[in-house]
Every structure is written in structure tokens, then in C-alpha cells.
Amino acid sequence: MWYGILCGLLAGAFWGTIFVMPRWLAAFSPMELALGRYLAYGLITLLLLAPRLNGLLGRLTRDDCKVLLRHALAGNIVYYLLLSTGVQLAGVAAASLIIGLLPLSVTLLGRRDHGALPLRHLAWPLALVVAGIVCINIDVFTHANGSGQPWPMVALGMLCAFGALLCWTWYAVDNARFLKRNPHYSGAEWSGLYGLSTGVVALALAVVVYACGGVGGAGRDGLARDWLHFWGVVTMVALGASVVGNQLWNIACRRVPVTLSGQLLLFEILFGLLYGFIYLRQTPRPLELAAIVLLIAGVAGSVWRHARPPAAALQAPPA
Figure (cartoon, one colour):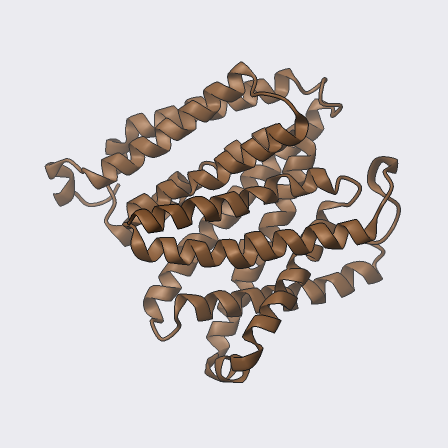
């Protein structure tokens, strides 16, 4: 189990880079960031799958292809498009803390699948999470003027981050249900097909967007655009976060209980915050720090309640 926890921590360290990539490449639009990252991800996956690609593709059914299509959109392209927009408009800390609700949102959406506790038994953890959301919203809008963004744009960034949260929550639950119904795919095989389908969708979308003039124009806010730097960063993030990070997460999920794997998602958020504060060369403001503590406490409390449920709750149907 400790080896699984270590793999979960390392996966979070790789995944945390996705929160600062929009800052590293501020001259590029969220659409360019999403398409660039997933084109690189698809190409790397294609090279890794090449020796056994024919056999994998021969096992795919039409229904499997539909699942891969919707997962590529919800779990990767649309998710990261919304997340990078949220980071650029609302900041790294706000977007990271909103995505930090993933362990709870995944648990709540999939509670009937896993026999989780009725919602009334999660009252206190949920109250802590709500308090953390209130703290980060107050902090974001209090400092909106100092960020250089008008408050309507900051509000849009927060909404985009919440949209990214909803996308990945739905993807995580739907993907878990699919794998349980289809044990003939190993985790590594399905992860590889997922990466390949994401690359194909990103390529098709890139052709359409480029034809419409949506990419390749002038830099955002008059910033210079270094395309060599762009491809270097997106390839690094694709290799680290999408390929290595996903494989480490698969190892972790095989070695730790489901409730603990949900808690390990916090490593992604904490590393994202750490990288963001290092990049900006600043420490958390009081409300940011309070939000971090409240969200960690809320998620940890939820996991603890699922790990040690009251005896009466075990016989009650989910709320």
C-alpha cells in the first residue's frame, strides 16, 4: 500500500504541472494549449502502442469507439480548455482549489455504484468544503483589481473552473463504470486507447479551428509567441502528466483502497498550488491558506467517514 501511496504522490507531482502551463505559455490561447498538449499526447501514445496497435484496434467495437470519443472530449480536451481558461482569468490558486473538489464530487456522483454513505452522514465534510469555496471566492474577488482582470472576467474564469470540475467528475465515474463492465481491457490498454483517441480528436479539431482562423494568429495581450518553446512545454507536460502520470495513477489504484485513492487526488491540487506559488514567487494569502486547509479537511473527513461508516448507515439506502 505504501508503494501505491508513493505512486499516487508522484502522479500528483506530474499532474500539478497542468495548472501552471497556461502561465508558462501566457501568449497562447486556451484552445491552442489544449490542442497542442493532446496532439503531443496522441503522438507519444501512438509511438508506445505501435508494436501492438493492430491487435488493440481489432478488439474495438462501435460502442467502445463512442465511449472513447466522449471520454476524449469530456476527460481531456473540453476539460483542459475550461481549466486553462479558468487559470488565465481567475488564477492558479482559484482554479486549483476548485478542481480540489474532485474527490468529493466523484464520490457523490458515483455513490450509488459504490454503496457510499447517505448524504446526511457527510454533512460536516460538505460544510467544510462549502466554507473553503466561500473563502476562495471572497479572496479571488477581493483581489480581482490587483490581478489586472475586471471582476466579470474573473467570474467567468471561476465558472470555467467549475465546468472543468464537472467534466472530469463525469468522466471519472463513467470511465470506472465502463472498466467494470469490460474487464477484457487492462488498465494500460484502455489508457493507451484513450490517449490515441484523444490525439485523433485533437487533430480533427485542430484542422477545423485552424481553417476558421482560431489558432496561429497574434499573441494574447500583445505577448511574443515562441512556437519552439510552446511545443517543448506541451510535449513535456503531455509526457509527464498524461503518459507517466496516468501510468503511476493506475499503479496506485491497484494497490490502495478506493477510498484512499480518492484522497490521493489531493496531491495533484497541492502540487499545482505549490508550482503556482513558486512561479509567482509568493506565499498563500490568509484566505487562500484557509481555503486549502478547509478543502483538505473536508475531503479527508469524507474519506474517513467512508472508511469507518456508522453501523446504521451500512443498512441505509443512499440518499
